[in-house]
Length: 262
Image (cartoon, rainbow, N blue to C red):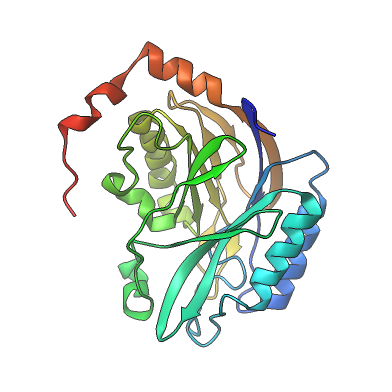
């Protein structure tokens, strides 16, 4: 079934440091709070453990328990579920965002921009390929946290490259103004829906995360701000609203006047 509306559920949750089982149980409980019919459930970056000093030793494989849990949740809710975790592949380690569809189809995106201010680039390997997922007639580009600061990476190359840009994040309260401003900027420059889903609570280093998850329309208007604390929000977004705005104000027609430099 395809249509003009995509219903998205955002889970702005706290993370128990280094406790995978506790976090999976916690997010199972949060998912149960979604009573409406939904198409897509978004979880935070590194939702199984958060950032911790054992990020390599606790990495999973693509046959690990979190992937199986996500498949179970996606099937039960008949909805896509997405979020990132640390994944080991051969001798490489990635901050990998998993996109799991109800039929068990799996896509993944490896975080391109690793956050050097906490040494993520020294522990993990960067990804090198953006993905665009087609689902229910929508085209969706999932990215991770620090990627938000690099507009060239998310810049649309054509009018129809994607309808929605989604960031799963661990973005601290101390830079919340950057978070909100950049999400709005990505929506305005790409004339697309932008969703930023952040965690809340404190991590192992006592860094505080407010949440402040946003849904921004293609004009740059914030239509949902989840504010501070744990909560679940379900809402629908419209593809025709974006298409109408791109016809009204067609900046996309001049997008070929720049060249991306790798």
